[in-house]
Length: 386
Image (tube, rainbow, N blue to C red):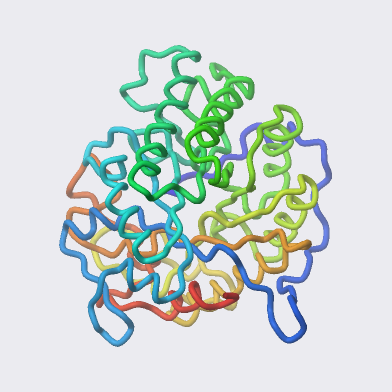
């Protein structure tokens, strides 16, 4: 995730399947008297090493300070998502940085979810900039680079005794990855043929280095069935990509209401006979900001009806998202991941890895308040539908 315009591109024109009608119920029952649990109740903690380097501390709700990884583990978080960049300007989110973080996670019993961006900076639907080190490579060279980079990171994790449990080959890749060659639409792009080459190389590297890891392909269209069908029809039906989990970003302020998203996830699980997961979601606990940067969520008009920007509203949103996943028919809803739940405000840890003065536009959506105390939503994330 990053500030972005969500890509629909050629999706609407390429789609032939009908748009969904009525949504399924949002809650699903398991055994009588016991709601169905979710296997994945995750949190993206990619910003943590840099935030800690700039003085961030984390506290339980009662104010007691502790290691944030331990706080997440004690709350019941099952997986932590770590993004990987190749050579960013600030030196964070690299192989060298995630290895010690993975050791901390394994010590506390939290699963490791690796999120490859194949970039030196943010990759999302509006941009998938190739790393500077790959600038002179042709398609064959880029394919090898995707494979080798994926294998290098995952191999290092395995060798230190912290193999990845979940692996994303690409981040929010609606428009493909490693642009322009891997762009799947528009003039000057390689189209789906090249997109599929890059994805197949990354997926094979996961199988070769970490065969027990589950793989996922991730787009940002949680409430958009037309784009979702276009994308996964290409990936699965046309190009036969072999992966395990359909992953989607789902933010209500970009991707629509809960009922529409529930219908989309139910359709995808049935259409492709694969489990689904919400790889990113988030909601504000306040509309105030702790720094001078205008936050992504800053207006009542951006909120979802019934979910105010309060600690309770944030917690209620996560219950609704958990219910959405539990309601996917056939038990195919694996769960969800809260995006950058530990990215609290600290000067020097802003959006732009090349600009130390850049601000944080997410601190009012973190799972810790402006006093660094865990919010009620963290308890919901870890314990609701356990």
